[in-house]
Length: 112
Image (tube, rainbow, N blue to C red; front, side):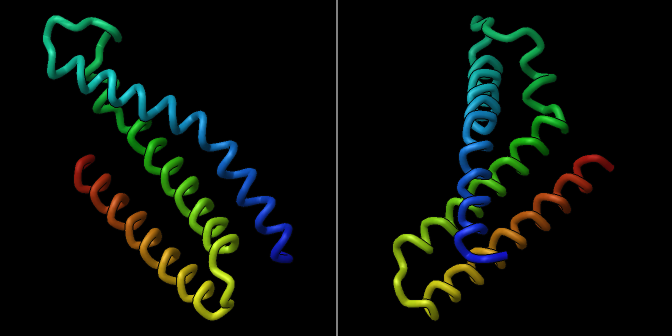
């Protein structure tokens, strides 16, 4: 894939994941505060939502896709030296793959 086309795809991914990521993050914040403050009743069944495996997985996937795409776009725009840009992208890829593996192991550990 050509570099300009890749950057367009990555920008589309950043734009597409931003609103769902915001909604899921706000949901986690609201349910977390509701669990901490017993008198606060914003969302029914806050504990079930806050500990839901699907929402947690969705948050992780959206966060990783959004973060990785944004880092690649940022490195393309800000780093002029191709060698340094390639190194930064490789390190970002390695770190995010490592985080994804860690999250997958934690999910497997939690579920059973």
